[in-house]
Image (cartoon, rainbow, N blue to C red; front, top):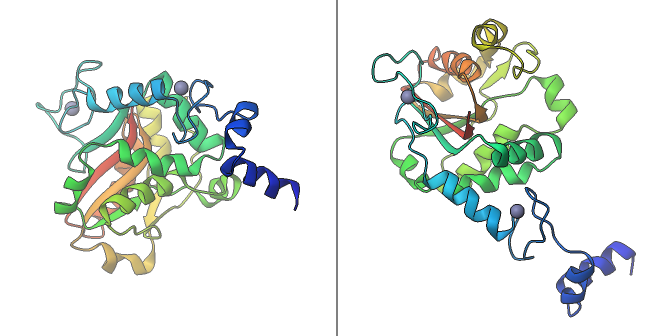
Length: 244
Ligand SMILES: [Zn+2]
Ligand SMILES: [Zn+2]
């Protein structure tokens, strides 16, 4: 038997206690030893994430946590979509999750985080298809996967709502938006998305859930939503792992 096979056997077999003693599984957020039955996190971080998700005083339109930052949605709503639903506030814990998802290859984590949304099944009554915000093909080739698509997979596996992953694409590479202010982001992302030629009939009349990893100013998601709305969908609701 080869070494990797032996290690796998040790992990699951009679010597599993010994194996975890020498090779403990670590929490992806705080590096503490986690129970091997817990996926990704130690118990303390699980409870912090649950608290983050459940204690959000989120605005029903823009998804901002009102106890952190107030919004003006009740006065004016400038977005082309119906609302933003976010699972977590973006803070030092969830920032670590997003980094792991985007830069450390932890794509499956994006899918598993969908399970932290307490009311995910309510989507079934107002969403027909899920569309992940696409990456530019050069970014996709470099990273090897689209984190928004993996988050969409997590939502779809719970709700059974189908994913339409090849409807919209990025016309040009826009670079990272993280260092730009709101108006620079708007300019940078303008007309960055387009609908694939054959996709119009798949979107027309549909209630779309557009998903991304983090939403900050909403510039990216607005541009992406506009390209889908132009194809005649009935509505677009937005969902993200974290809201900044
Ligand atoms: Zn932890
Ligand atoms: Zn709001």
